[in-house]
Amino acid sequence: MELTLPATPVTLPPGVAVRVPVALHNPSLAARDVRITIARGRASGWASVDPPTATLAAGATATVDVVLQAPADQPPSASLVPFTVHAEDTASGATAGFATGLLTVALPVPVTGDLTPRPGAAQTFDLRLGNDGGLAADVRISAKLDPPGGSAEARPEAARIDAGASLSVVLRARPTRPLVGAPRPYALIVTVHDGAGEDRRPLLTAVGTGTRRPRLPNWAAGTAAVVLALGATAAVAVSGVRMPLPGRDRAAPPPSAAASAPVAAAAVGRPFVLVDVFPHRGADGGRAAADAQRAKLAAAGMPLRMVDSLASDELADDGAGFWVLLHDGFASPGAAQEFCTQWRAVAPKCTVTP
Image 1 (cartoon, rainbow, N blue to C red):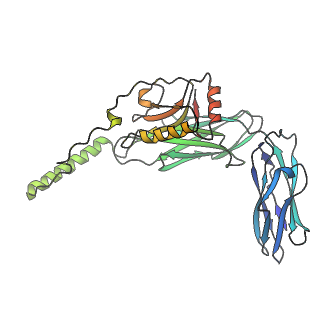
Image 2 (tube, helix red, strand yellow):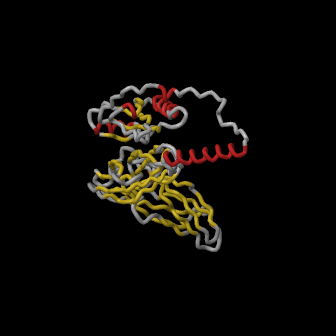
Image 3 (tube, one colour):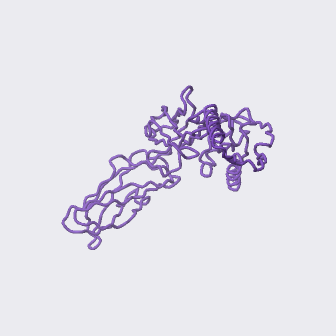
């Protein structure tokens, strides 16, 4: 039985489970049932195998995972630690094959960053990442749009940041473009993951906002409407047929509460943390979605408040405006970052605005 482990050492953050794939290959001419175990050693107490057994037909290949999890209080390794994976014949208990890998225990690398729109380049943002730790960091960058529709990309999508170094990432958003009407607001959500395992909690999440202009400006849409109306009027005059106009006998709807309510001034103290953003859109101006998210976070115990960006000089509104969930009053940007770190599990979009 041939066993193959990754050639690069496995990095274990204390208390975090890391799955290491083990490739199995049966080169014999008969099927084999094997049990996968970890040889005694320092790492054997941290390891388990999923699944612990496998059946391989003649010439077949399969993969199992060795799950490694160092204790939460385990100090970083001074050197690489070897671990050996054994394949034993299920019937006889004889060793069918083995492979040896290396691991090291290291604290998670602190990665910081800020996302800013690029001046003069529509739907383009620059993300600057910094590695403040003592070890190189392998990272993966992903981006998505809110509301969904269109695409977003990061260049590069993966990179290594040396200790004390920085990296510039270009983000391009391509939200779906409306045909006519007012510019449509959108949010670009960028997430930075540890390259060794994307199933772990993100190292960093940042949010950028912008607007997408329609394909036809309002004046062009108005001109087309006038031309169509004149054409319809001419057709009626020639034919003598009286055409009912849509909504002619319908009462005008009352103005919405969101449109008629006065906007009160709202002071926002810097530094503050941006928890979530909801564009002013829909029949209720996006208020219901914002209230639902605020209630959800409040139920989890997270302190925050909701501010209308149109009522604050500190918040960007991009014309249409946003409902912004935030928390302010911090003594320093460091205190704000600690707040985001504390609540990252329930509010992954939390980002600091100094």
